[in-house]
Length: 599
Image (tube, rainbow, N blue to C red; front, side):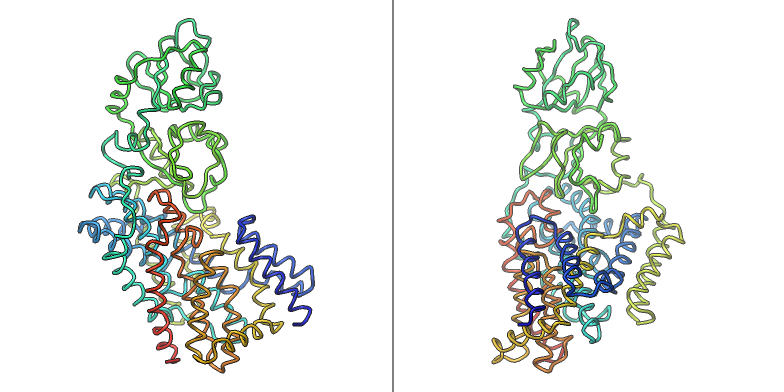
């Protein structure tokens, strides 16, 4: 190999190892790759960041805004309502309905956003039918991934299409994936609903969904064994001190659920609430911590009567997750000033596969964590309106909803998609034009637009763009492509395509399908040149393979997103993901061959 090719190969290999080690986030690695290629002179300085203006990145920005517009205006509520009506056929019917809804939404929005829209309604339907969340939540994620195969607007498909354009070939159109992804989606949903769901564990106690019964969630998080009643004695130094000054939370790691004063419950008391003699603090935490607190002039009381008062109160228990692109990721409840902002108390966090009920204020929140929150209707309404959190409860009729704005947003999105599908304008222009229309129609504010963009995907694609370009321009992609062809030459183009699809799918389980698409798309184009076939045909194998991300939680963010609500472990994913992967590969190879006329 030439010197430049060695450098490109080393940088690509180092990026792969960094992503595999999880030492840096994939988007940070991509950024590092772009800078390294520019500093070393492999890619001209003026072209290092041209990926930010690529059609793939512009399309992702536009579709992120369109999807957010549908969600914020409530247009997706109609789909959620239909889901509740359709999901009354038991577990199989629920799986089919949830996956179908998720697949439909993933045609026009990011997979995580699609899952976030469906999840609250699915949670409510699961509760009503008394089904096991562990049999539903992972199928929901799989539905978004299957549906993404049928549209150009999936990130991996956009990356491959952009690689074709960069290599001088024609990119894909909006509907080019329907003939392949459509049948795969239908068969995949049928398999999971009839067979695959039976391969999943039945865990219906550890992580139930929100319930009308006030005790259901508290019992699921085993709060009864951690509820303590601490009465403030008249001689206590805490008498007439504020709750914040008492140090109950910071010193003993307990969460104050309520204060009982003269028989009246004060829910989620504010930090500046002044304690009085005979006040009873209802605190969630370890018994030994409560016993330590008695040194401050507090007396432990029996909890039965107080637990009954909590059950009969007007306050509610709900589960709350971090929303996609939440700014709360990596922050603690103390840093977020959660109680002061919302007037609600977090009494347990489902974190790392278990319920944590002590020292909650100092736990950095992670994507997929689920919090058990106790608060008034007003507090829960504030949580529902905050874009950083997702309340696992179906929307109520009394929630604010503008039918006119929802119809307007749906019309704008439909018009943008139609213009792209009919080639009236290019896909990036259609998506960004639709996004602008949402702002001008006051369906979204500019602040909401900036928050809607999937910046991680933008930096991942734009950062890896110079590497993909360097692979092509240096001739390394052609060289690797010829090596792939020579190793699979006996089977012809179909054998090479199948090998690329399997390789892409396997890489995607480790470094994500998006990254595997960036790395393998140029190689597929090089292999097509060596074989003398249409590069769009072999690139399609990479595009479809980049969506086969069923085997691990790390393969796709949506897999991690449902890990908490479904109470899954990493070992649960291959139980259903492996047979589904084999099925999809078995369908994809002949479908791509027929659609691209390789068969």
